[in-house]
Length: 284
Image 1: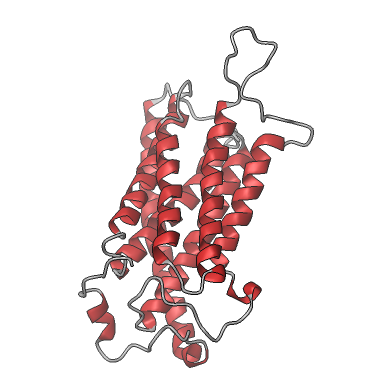
Image 2: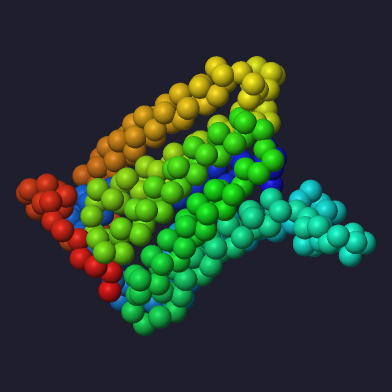
């Protein structure tokens, strides 16, 4: 949706995923876990207990966002590609269909996560990683062709989002060969965090500027400050990740022994330094 809520909702979704990634990867590194996709915990029995949080989040967020594209506000229906009454059969609702395609891929990724972790006898990392990579690749591709007919400010904010998403996608692709590199884990989490906070900021830039005056593509200063603010998001989110890692470290030091996953092992002296130096193994 090209509306205020249409940017707030995906921003909150990306933000929640990034926070989950940051805390999860911090906990894994502190536990000395070398595997981004650890084996299933055999002590966990039952379908519901095996459901992955990330997969359920993708499925719910994606489905609700997809439905909102076509049926929000209530009473609206935008499922038609074109109107039968139009003799030229011109396409309708291109933005909604692009957004729905993006959300649909994240739904698919969530479903693959659930199949891998809750349905198959052994976890299939390749299946999960391929689904997430496809979702970010499609998002990048759609963003590249999402600015047709839009004003300069909207074009630039989406270009910065495209840049972030493209680098995220590149990292996911690299992880097919080197999945167990903590540096890539945290870089990926940082970029998803930037996507979340930037979308939240963009909603106010485009639809509800605090000053009451809308940004103008005819003002060079406005376009320059867009990039400036984006750079601030990069620094802010790097700092936020540092705070989250520190908070996770404090919790781990206090309660770590009570919450260790069966697939993890505690880090020994010097283990954390070794994690960043070891080469990752390919996804199997």
